[in-house]
Structures are given as C-alpha cells and as structure tokens.
Image: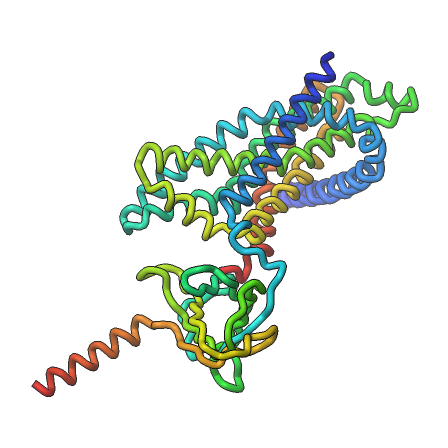
Amino acid sequence: MQRTTMDLWVGLFVVMGVIALMILSLKVGNLNVYNPSQSYVISGNFENIGGLKVRAPVKSAGVVVGRVTDIQFSTQTYDAVVTMSMDSRFLFPKDTFASILTSGLLGEQYIGLAAGGDETMLKDGDKIMKTNSAMVLEELIGRFLFNKATEDDSL
Amino acid sequence: MPSRLVSGIRHIGHRVIEGVWRLGVASRFFILVLLKSGTSLRRFNLVIRELYFTGVLSLIIIVVSGLFVGMVLGLQGYETLQKYGSESAVGTLVALSLVRELGPVVAALLFASRAGSAITAEIGLMKATEQLTAMGMMAVDPIARVVAPRFWSGVISMPFLAAIFSVMGVFGGYLVTVVFIGVDEGSYWSQMQSAVDFRFDIMNGFIKSCYFGVAVTAIAVFEGYDAPPTAEGVSGATTRTVVTSSLVILGLDFILTAFMFRGVS
C-alpha cells in the first residue's frame, strides 16, 4: 500500500519536471518559432556590420526566415562576410537585397531581406550580391553636422 | 621559533597530502558506484523509493524559493529597467537569469542542503550503527544496495528540480511585474521568447543542472560512506557535504559558463 502511494508521488514529480522542461522550451524559449533542421546556407559581404551578432535573426517583411550563423572578416575584400542559415521553406530570388537593420532605436540588429525580381533562386552556398551596411549612428551624426555646416556657409 | 615554523609547514603539507589522498579515495569510490549501478537499474524500485525522498520531498522548498526568487528578480529588474523606459524587457531579464544561472545554481544549492545532507546523514548513521557491515556479512553489497540508488535518484531529480525552479521563477516574475505592477502581458512573454534560445540557454541550463546533480550526490554519498562512525563524525560529514558541494557547484558553474557562453552574444 505504501509502495503504491510513493510510486504515485514519484510519477507526479517526474511529470512535473517534464512539464516544466516543456514550458521552458515552448513558452519561455523560442523552440516553435524557428526550426533549423531544414535549412540552406547563404552568405553576403557587408561593408560595416555595426553591432550584428551571431544568432541574430534574418527577417523578411518582419518574419524570421533564418539566423546568422557566422561572421568573418575577409582580407581579400576587407569587409565582413556574414553567413546565414535560412529556413528551406523560404526561397529568395538571386537579386535579393540584404541590409542590416535595427529593431527600434537601440534594439538588436538583424538582417532584413527585400526580395528582388530574378527568376532564379538563391541556392545553398550562394552569395547575396546586393548588400547595405548597418546604419552607424556616429557616421549619421557626422554627416548631419557636415550638412549643417555647409548650409550655414551658403547662407 | 624555527621549530614552530617547521611544524607549521609540516602541518600545511600534511593537510595538502591528506586532501589529495581523500580526493583519490573519492574518485575510486565514484568509479565503484558507477560500476555497481547495475543492481539499481535492474531493481528500479530502489531508485524510485529514493527519488521520493530526494526529489518529491525537495519540491516544496524548490517551488517556494523559485517563486520568490522570480518575484524579487521581477521587482528589481523593473525598478532598474523603468529608468530607461524599457520595462517590457523585464521578462527577458527574469527568464535569462533564471534559465542560464539562477535556476540550476540555486536549485542545486538548495538540493545540496535539503537532500545532500540527508543522504550523508542517512548513510553515515547506517555506517555508525554497523548496518553497512551487517549487509556485507549477508553478502549484500552496501555500495550496490545503499549508495548507488541514492546517487542515481539525485542525478535524475536534479534537472527536473532545476527546471521546476526556473518555471516557478518565471511565473513569479510574471506575477509581480504583470499582475501587480502592470507591465504589458504580451510584451513580457514575446520579449522573453525572442531572447531565450532553446539550444544556447535552455539546453545549457539543463546540462549544467545535470552536472550539478552528479557533483552534489557524488559528494553526499562519499561523505556519508567515508564518515567516521561516531555521532560527531556523522555531523561533521553532513556539514562537509553542504560546504563542499556548495563550493563545487559555484566553481563548476563558473567553468561550465565559461565553456558554454564564450563567444555567444
């Protein structure tokens, strides 16, 4: 008799533990958002990646379609080579435009893809040709001040 | 004066050699426990009985402290984040600190003081009252019959306890920030979900808690088995279990964190 109630409690404990792990993966984590099992890899050269990090999302129209898997510096072209793992459900034309964007004013940076009109699609290992680097706040302010100065001169 | 100096150095050397010697015995004991685990897998009822004592009876302290740790995290996180107008990120703060660090570490510390000390005291008292010797005389291996089931029950229950701790903490943070203070519920969960990664955060936390489970229960069973068979010896062994396993948890946590989160954003 005592044995069975103990078994019940232990069973309940294990069930609670498994449920806790499931809550952690599904409710707290983002297991259901992006499943990298079926994916293809593309890369792109960016002049300046700003604060882009590995694991940053790749979004198109605001929807996560992939993740940044690697960022390397290339000594051939002296710019950053960003490798992305894309969900294979989403194919993009060859002339897709990739730019590094910021969510909100100070939020994390991600890669935004704007689809082009080419007939052929990007395959595994392909390279995105059209890229736009990150908006660096200092450069922006510098340009603004420069413009302001020339305006003042012309006046 | 020199003779006192010499005896002081000799004392330190003795302590060091003693420590190394004990570590060797502990490692040999650990291997022996692993080798003799076959019985506890075949007679799984033994493990289930111990799971009740180590896992189920630790639930209350884990659940309550998880809830309060999450509530405090939510409160403190809100206080600081609202200065920068980003109080919706409080979900991220609560979830990441719980899943990565506080869940495994605090659950393991509580587990060491709640279940680890109980295991040590139980085995130590069995040794002091010569129950272990009696088992040996009846050709029942005390390591296979007494030690291994307790070891495995701790190893199994620790990850579950850590997961339950984290979930209760996230719920506690939700309770304080969303229900009491009034942070937007949608942004609490969505910010959390976009920041917490399954592989990097949840799996690493889970792996951490597995390591802690092995460390805590290995220390607990060894201290119990190695305790001098007196009342004083058992009490000293129980204290040593809590102290050593707490230090090992914190040290191991640093090493594991350095391995897991190096180079990750």
